[in-house]
Amino acid sequence: MSASPIEHLSQTRIVKKLLPDQPGGKKLKRRFGDQLICVRYRQDRAQNMRYTTVELLVDAAPLVKPRKTTPDRVHVHIGHTEQTLRQIVRSHGGQWDISRQAWSLPRTTARRLHLLDRVVS
Image 1 (cartoon, rainbow, N blue to C red):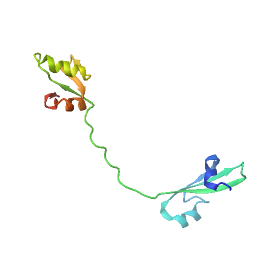
Image 2 (cartoon, rainbow, N blue to C red):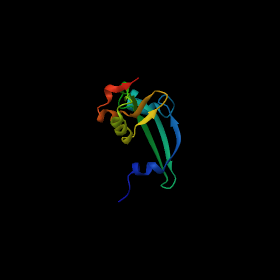
Image 3 (spheres, rainbow, N blue to C red):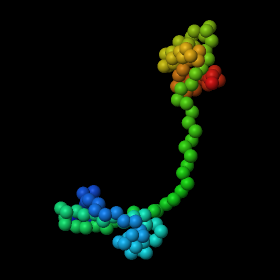
Image 4 (cartoon, rainbow, N blue to C red):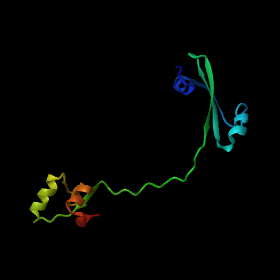
């Protein structure tokens, strides 16, 4: 069974790209209308074939703004007398940030340890 032309397109070479209003694209613009983006002529020398392909606009939608992400790491205040809590934070990957005088750790860890109420800005 012979392969379809679509399977051969990955092995073709684009020899010409036309906009819809250029000669060679006008006939296809009448056929596809304003959805036509461009026309491409491809050659497959191994199969001795020429293909005409079109790029069509099939959907348009406004961009969705990405959700505001929270910082990956937060800084939490742990008092000097809370040695046990300091040890727990350290064992969960927390690091002392000397410039902020607070413990730095992933937000997810702070949430899991119920420390979000101690987050400092």
